[in-house]
Image (cartoon, rainbow over all chains, first blue to last red):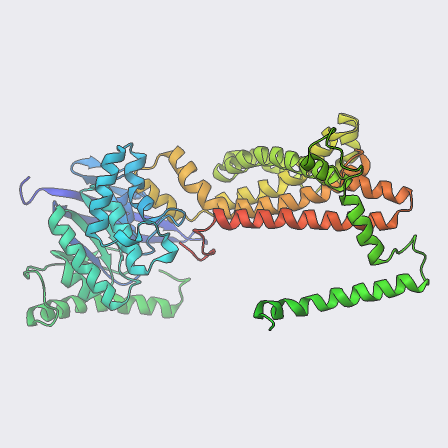
Length: 269
Length: 274
């Protein structure tokens, strides 16, 4: 595996949705993007820029209207356990306990009881969920729920983790803890992560590379490689310089998004 | 010292007590014939009589427990309950798979929905003549009617439940490698269960209404039969005692269903829950 080999290869991907009034919305327009193995990539942009749409296409939840996505050379047609998904809304199964949620993927793939127990023990310890194993999701805080959701994906040893604003609904302190934890997991398990966020700071803190997307139609506006050593210090001059640079790109799109909203959401074009 | 629990309970008891007192006063005043309105005390006396064994205890003929439950009321309640449970179980066993398929598949829904919409507004009671024609008298027509009463609420709620399953659970399960069968059994069924159980509770309520009516017409046992029989003898005290028994049994069934719901849905916080 050479450093430059594209692992996730997105070629000419467009996504067109039809709204209620048969109006076409171009969510993605000719996206070309490569993610290399082990990379931590952030998709950054205002809401409506198609970053979640792109993530859903990689996940296989929606098939692109045009273009192709391959992972390790194989085309994506459907969702699968090689690409674990972490949702902003957690999407834990509320009728299963923490333990059952985490082992669900292994269970349906017919893993042995001992294999499941070993994996479970490891993950519960690593994500500090040991005391919560019998709880139902409704009895957990947002941060705890997202730990369970991460553990559920880790259980399957998916080489790729897709994360859709996973920490967006959490308070700042919890978010910071989980960011550090995610970086630890990423380094330890050598995951490839595609992480959607609208927080500029979050993307500078986490990513190897941040891709800024444009507001409707969604295209790639700018790519910024972030080569700061980790752990990164958000108070450092370098960190702030990159943040300011990204902010310029993002704010332009945010402005367009606002103008569009003022004009009325019915007239998207 | 009054306990706080008694204090919260007390206001609710005032109205029934006043009502009972007025009823007793009217009944003993002689304004109304006791044939039309027996006094509450007479009803209570009759209820105990109805509950008690008919013959004195004879150890040569039966065990003590068997004797204790040999009263007419318990026999009637058992007969009614047995019919409700049989009809309900048959109705649920038919409605649940059909509802799951109709909810999950647009084609199946299109195939069955017109028929369902056509039959659903017909009150189960309106099936009585046909039930008797088809099944004669006795348990079969009664159970048939109860089945119909339980079937539609469970069916409609199961369809709605499956259709309201949040798509995010499906996505999460698919990305964890779930195939269609796993999706159906481990995701859609439990996610729809709050709806299904609400339907079961409504279905049980309908079944209980239907059993009383069915017993008045098609059978000669059970609580519904007993109060109609009592009317023919002008036993108004027994009619009211029977009605109270029906009320108590209905309350017991509904409480049982509600307890079962709470236990099965202990994970459920409400509809805002993800």
